[in-house]
Image 1 (cartoon, rainbow, N blue to C red):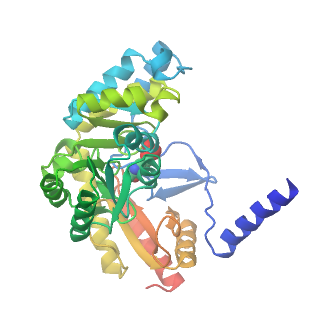
Image 2: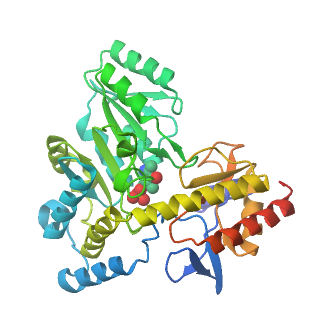
Image 3: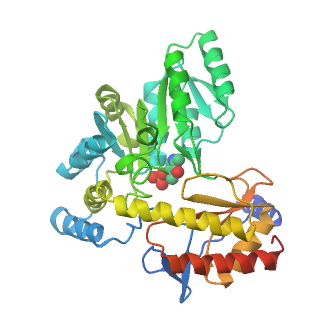
Length: 393
Ligand SMILES: *Cc1c(COP(=O)(O)O)cnc(C)c1O
């Protein structure tokens, strides 16, 4: 044990020496545009709370009501005695919202992606994955027996090369897997082009729409709706725009959902979501469908913030998504910038290896509908001052 702990300490020291240690800041009080940290109110520019619903009174009321009426926990997996009417109501509601035949809930989208591939694809099949896909897709693919192919991020020529390779290798079924939005960059997957290639090669298309559902596309129906194309299988989360608590899902054709209910391991061997979260998820979908005003504010904020940062002279990645990364290069610089901003009352997180490539360190700012124009002006002023102080402006 002593030797093992020494080894673990050495690894930690290595992480620290490279400037890669992540430090968690404590929030007291709810998630929101402003949060309390260490007795101080901070502007919060790094939540996935795109529509500002994380402390919405309707969701809190729905959760309270379910707590009172349906109890605290399920103490069971779904198939033994963990399915309430609420669970099925949310699964139907999600399927309706996403325009699929059915959906199946998981404890998180990490579990949804972890459980998706293994029951659906066997050794005779192929899965072709974008190189920037979320860690949970990568892990889910690792857990299945299908042959694996990878294409450079959004590189359609490379995707076609991989489709040809999978065909040449004799794949029975081919599934293309992509994030709908690549979360470190805010880039949108090229779904129309991917769909054309998928159809040409007879492949299935799976889209993880975590950073889109609720706010991208008409009524927030996500990237397929945004582009007017169809995904065969969708995965997503309740932990971002849809209230921000937790829970994930897979939505798709009835037989696919039925088989996942029989075989998906994180579904079969993990607890059912608690009623309060499920009820609030239902309330979140009611709000989201009617939230054109919140979506307009979100994109108005994103435009204002992007222009303000660009005018100040920051190096941004181009795009239209409310993820707006400020590129800084080295991990230490991103850490220093985050620290400077923290001192000025702005909470952001530096992102660096291993979540982004080495040399691609950044501060990923994220807009949401709860931020006011005053908030953004305060944030821009802090960015200008911090940028000067660390020497990037
Ligand atoms: C956040 C995220 C997940 C994980 O979702 P959870 O519900 O928090 O587990 C999966 N995929 C993508 C693309 C994400 O952004």
